[in-house]
Image 1 (spheres, rainbow, N blue to C red):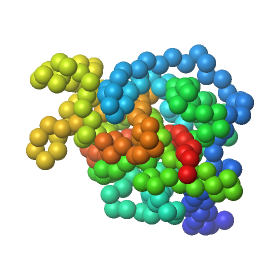
Image 2 (image 1 turned 45 degrees about the vertical axis):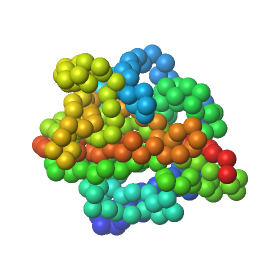
Image 3 (image 1 turned 135 degrees about the vertical axis):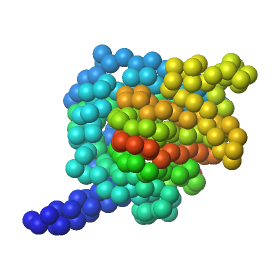
Length: 273
């Protein structure tokens, strides 16, 4: 097949996979079935950044080797990023200039990482509630993703005939490669749970250089997370009443030099009509 034909086939495959993610085709989810990869020995630590809304920083969510292996799994499938519309379909937008690639949920390493994320969430995620397709995102210099939320404004309908509604109840964003300057993940509406920093102390020092104060409209606001390979952020998108929390609006700030690669994990939750 000609090179152009191969690229077109990849584009069509990516569109199918992410469409399956929206419509919940059986190939696009991972369930609680037995895993072929065990990662019981992996250790990570947590730091609470904010209680309301809940934002948790996870140190060493993946090892360096896991991060590199995940990148290799998806590196042939990177294409220009798009967004999933709440009424279905995919759309490119000028505010998202990165590249994205799906990961095969059947791969042992991907299953391992999703199992780790599921255990992190505990009873917040029920056994029959799946993850969306994991997504790699790659940022070159000047590439960015403007302010956005991860949840849909209206719950989505499963296409399995059940009529069940679902949404992205929470998000994990995992830094897989930090060979860059700048490129922080910025939450302008998150108030950091650190009394010393609130009283004028050094937020970057308090959290070991992993985060700094953000700035918007000429004044300090929110928090920026520095890309550090293997570390992750977790936040809850949907409140107890099933409503999206706009305070979790966030942005992938432009990369200065080098390359940043991350991974999105989106656990789904079912809701009553």
